[in-house]
Length: 174
Image (cartoon, rainbow, N blue to C red; front, side, top):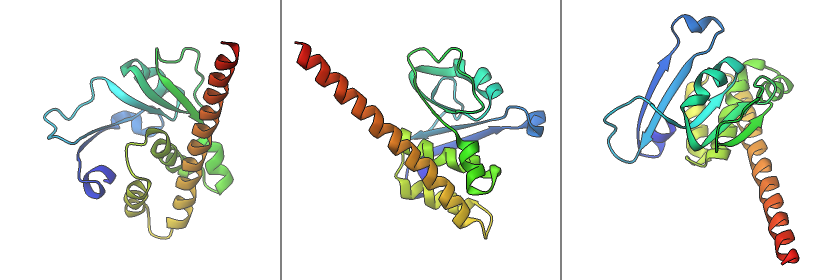
């Protein structure tokens, strides 16, 4: 919704729940483009979001080299990170529990994705999310989204600080 309705891009969504809907892995594939989309399926993913170990193990091989992997820190053990991937984790479930409802972990992750990917404007995603949640839960979901977004902003700031420190260290050795 954020891409197609609020940002004027082309977008497709394919979901696979089948028998997995009862607690096993499921997937949602989103294709976003400025051009018409002729094939709406993901063969290699630029971004992987994994909220469970099973989902990570199943879909991690589809991530392109240099892709972005966002994982649930407490539920996904990374014995072998994707080759060349930019990998970031967030304790989305724990954060959701602290906000009062475990079920909003996906919204925490949505905020984190918005922050880390920088694909869409924050307001576009927030509007799309608010149009999709049950009436009466807008405040809770907005808090979850903002928590994930702010966590991502903090991570990016820390990463930038480490990179600048490393760059300064290299210059002083030269």
